[in-house]
Amino acid sequence: MKHTLSVLVEDESGVLSRISGLFARRGFNIDSLAVGPAEQQGISRITMTVRGDNRTIEQIIKQLNKLINIIDVKNITNLPCIERELVLFKVFASNTSRSHILEIANIFRAKVVDMSIQSLTIEVSGDPGKIFAIQQLLSQYKILQIARTGKIALVRESNVNTEFLKKTLSYQDISY
Image (cartoon, rainbow, N blue to C red; front, side, top):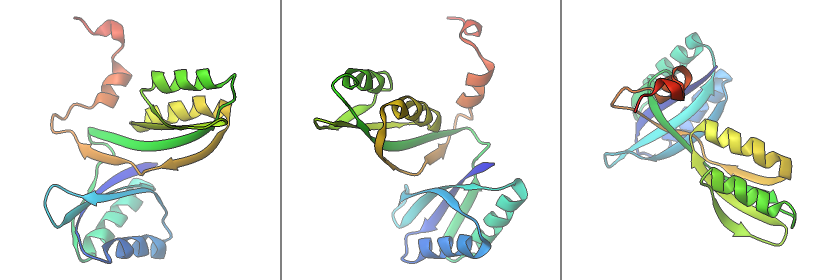
């Protein structure tokens, strides 16, 4: 199972190296990784997705907490979160397929950021489900290149789990 970890660290050189070294020594792989400044100066937030069962993830968290410059480690996998990713897709676009690709981009509120005679480069951001869906549709037009950020996530303070709501409510259940 994929787990999302949110790690607050002191913004010091070598922190990311120590974290990746810990994973390498234990034989674990990091599926995605995003690092950037947090709300407080001198602190960075690392959002990573890793695979493993609950016991393995608990062990990883314990090991991370032992490293210097680590402030806090949270497994936010099952918490209500806002998750986003950014992806650039370079798609082969012939004269006949170009309008279809533009229509897909429009439906997903993606931006065309580059255009050539034979390709379109599309920028899309959103939750992992949206990214998966547009990739599935664009794959029928031959994706030439993909550049993808790691997932970033923040816990919802409202504690409203929109993913849970999507699964349990249908449009007929909502009264206006």
